Length: 187
Image (cartoon, rainbow, N blue to C red; front, side, top):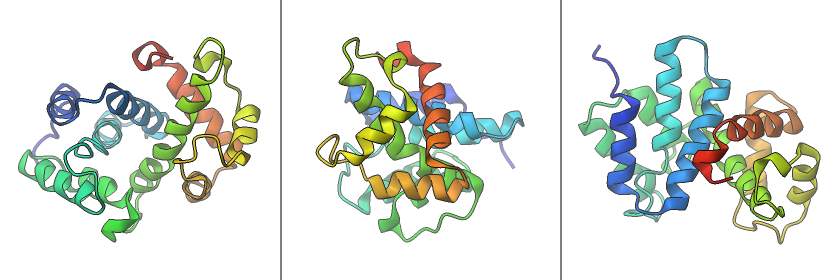
């Protein structure tokens, strides 16, 4: 089995297909959240990071489901990305029919929507900073259906459930991961 492409190669691919700065930052946030749950093994961590970084790289070109992420999966296959990474990316979108089976599949799904919601929570704070966001405040915001209305609350809850974690613990884990890269996120 050949080695997976490097993070630098994945970042270049992300930049090749994604022009939106906010979508690039979302990719970095999901990568950080996935890595917070990744096993200690360096090769595994690399795969989990790649899945997070590239899960939406094709979204600007193919925004309609299931073109996104099916088109991206085809591109990733052509570029030598492992089946496990591609499957996790397909499984993060229910329209593809791919089932979430592995821990990586479940983690990517769980980290996608919550990272966007945490970003939204930070952006309404006076300093637009993740340092100002607390898990209890995030729970309150989740109940406000008008706030960040495009974020699926059902997916956030389902993600924590599939990880076997209380929602507040999942929020805290992802918040800590995103705080660790706050400068890169502009938050």
